[in-house]
Image (cartoon, rainbow, N blue to C red; front, side, top):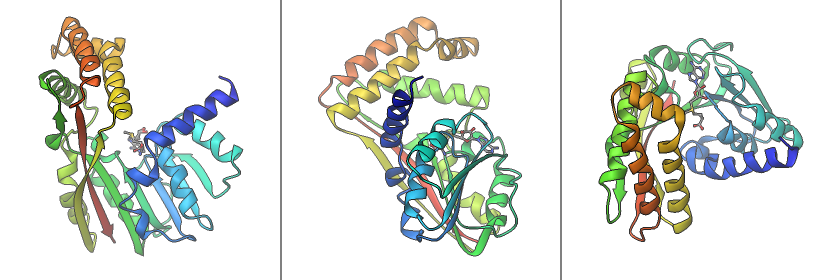
Length: 265
Ligand SMILES: C[S@@+](CC[C@H](N)C(=O)[O-])C[C@H]1O[C@@H](n2cnc3c(N)ncnc32)[C@H](O)[C@@H]1O
């Protein structure tokens, strides 16, 4: 891929999933010189934003998948962002000393682990006693879907949740468990809350619907869903058309509940 294309790819990914929205709950607790970890950073669109918030500090992004942060690493180098490093590691066994970080983010990772207990214990171990951990997980129990016809979009999310459970991809109700998990791990103070991230403009609705329709046509998604007997290829084809219609509906609205915790060791 050409360098310019790669750059515009990561820039639009940052716009869609940046620290300003997805780490908004942690940002007020960050100071310019902090040492930070983003555990399970993935594409690292949020990590890049964190590095801007702690310009005199340093941010480490960690993910178990070695290729996940390649584009972000190039973007950081090309923009002269030199307080950011990435490493491959397992969040359940982090390669850092005790109390190495002032602030830690763990966004949308805990729900992907069958048992997140070890990972939460690790987050506490590597955070300074004066530091803070912020974690967030979606909870599909509180989805808001509006429009003239919502049965199709609802069915799609029912299919996705069944697939996540059948394949052990993620727990769609992890959000509500966060407070208990962090309490159990022995954090001194835990504050849990939920915020919605929503799609409510013509541009956002159309892009969201287009992505869902694309998912319904995705070969791998179709094969997995059919293999578990969750839905047929024909039904997914119908759902792709329904998403396209929903994207044109002036009454369409979509919102995801993100459960979040702030925890102090
Ligand atoms: C849904 S993505 C979230 C990425 C990013 N935090 C975000 O919110 O945009 C989950 C990420 O967690 C990573 N992950 C899953 N298990 C992990 C583990 N045990 N240790 C480190 N990373 C892990 C995955 O590779 C994936 O990149």
